[in-house]
Image: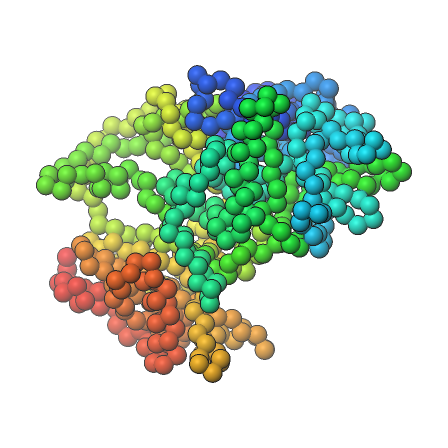
Length: 563
């Protein structure tokens, strides 16, 4: 077992105000019911009851195996705190907290379960306190006391070979498969869930396997893959809807609203999980209780995903709402900064402060996505606003809150995003650098990168075209080693001036292939058509870059060299 911060090294995140504020180490033991514990303070989203116990021996920092011992924490006197469901991306059973900050994510017993078959016959919804056929408890108290206050909470039981089983708390399934962002989780916990709350304008091209989505306002791009699966796989959509409806039924029945969740797919998968082996009857390692899922290999039902994000920035709102007949003399005030000691409070966020995303860095949850292209638009430059600035700066914001704004208190709305790596680490690829530098010299233009991908931040694989004879042109590929090819990379830029725009396509080659394209009449198919044309043009007549892009753009828009 590795005592490590590598999975969540995020001490710059806001401290959780509801957690104990002392020098003791506290372990997240379990998740309980979901409710609105105080409607006067928190109206926009429910909270979950988190059970924590104090770690009794700080020597676990040297010998983390101590945490497997049932006496390692004060489990009989748990601290119970209500935490908003939007905080769930940061919370995992078994993690160690101190002064409201995460300090360690031990691996406990890290296991890999290969070739699991996930379907209605192999996976069963059970309660944490189940006595299996009166032969014994799945989670025996003597070996696992940490769930005893939540024996009515739900888990999924997965069959394993040799009469063994895997127990996954439903809240962990929700966190792992839908917890990429706070705003996505919030939607799941507030029924009824309808598709346009998450996305619109879906389009799936069967030939290429490319899915295109328009994410709803406030939905982070880090959730695009999960939402793409929800659109393509009926199991995923039913699972997402069931989270909220099951809570509603539990609340109405008076039995307590404990979360329920299923796997968002059916089929085979490999799982990597952190947890603890427990005994059952005469088998000392019969049940593996999962504290946190780390990896799931089941493939997503698309080959590539392109998504657009609705702009909610204040500048965009001002621009769209401005009276077109009035001069642009609006005074913009400098935004308030967040305090270095920002605290996450259990209250509704402010209606007046701009929402800020906060990234938490984790490991790759879905290795299938590392083999697929996920991309969006990215603004590189835009005409400067003609606003005057008020030089006064408001005082720092001391508090933050997850969920939709709903109060006048000064608490920053915040959306936690789980990311596997920093996109800021991606420089422009070598074949693009000259073009990017030349575009950067343009002033007064709106320039967007239309191929901002998860792989390198700039490019996507070129469209692989098949001829009428079923053949693929080898020129679309680059040889990277003996008998191994990969698709060439391609970047697409949109350059707009006033109401007109053109697209620049650059294909990886030496010298780089570059061509300009005019927009089509259909916005939804414009970019896919451009990519198809670019691949066909590269095959038939490669056009090397021969002149400065900035000069070419000014000539296209009939503008003088100096603007």
